[in-house]
Image (cartoon, rainbow, N blue to C red):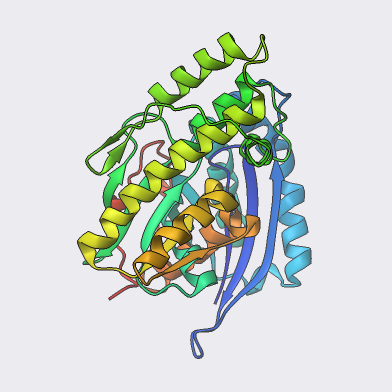
Length: 340
């Protein structure tokens, strides 16, 4: 069975085509094409402009994916799209294309939870069996574990996502958004030598990042100009603090469910320092960390195709009149029929 997936919940427009061999269980990535809306340094991306970007590029990206996969339209069994969560205007722009293709090609359509897409693609690529999942991105921060056909949220951010915290600090430092602000903070942090103590805000199983961002912005405004610190020092301090918080709540979840595996997914999951810190903790518990590279960590269409096809194989289809989008779509709202 073959599915095409359309992802556009934020500034990454992704089209993926995947094949599931229902006899052998082998999953094959046929195409994974992405186009990113990159804004000037010191700025973020607005929903309106991001939606325009997606509308301008989605048809060429779909054509490129079909060419790369070397399949025909008749070979596609189902069209999958990101139903949410995400930014409203970009979500709608991509959903309209998915609906139009479903009508043009006479194919069923499946709306996919973006977070479930990350989790299932991570499990497939890494081979993780039943891990504690740390889902960290620009819009989401959650610690998740599977139980009784749901991905249960054990802990999450109380305000902004960790990726949003890093991205906004990159804006304060006027760092480039190419390839991503988080990646550039990671490179700066590698050169940091002086650690600044920042608010460490873990509340039970939950975390908070807005106060840390305000605090480090104050330090930057007061101390960068008189050379009391460097941008590299501040990036280093911010990363070490927020990643330590994430490791703590992940370890607590591991202890609670008696798990030996941690899977890191989402755009921030590409960060090698986060993977390194998590690995040190997991090694002490005789466990193992699973992570993917930027092909699958960063938002992509292949994860939507994969999760959508898993649901479709259980008989799930989204009626055309219900193929809507929602900016708020929690991970634990989805019934995971394809797992025991």
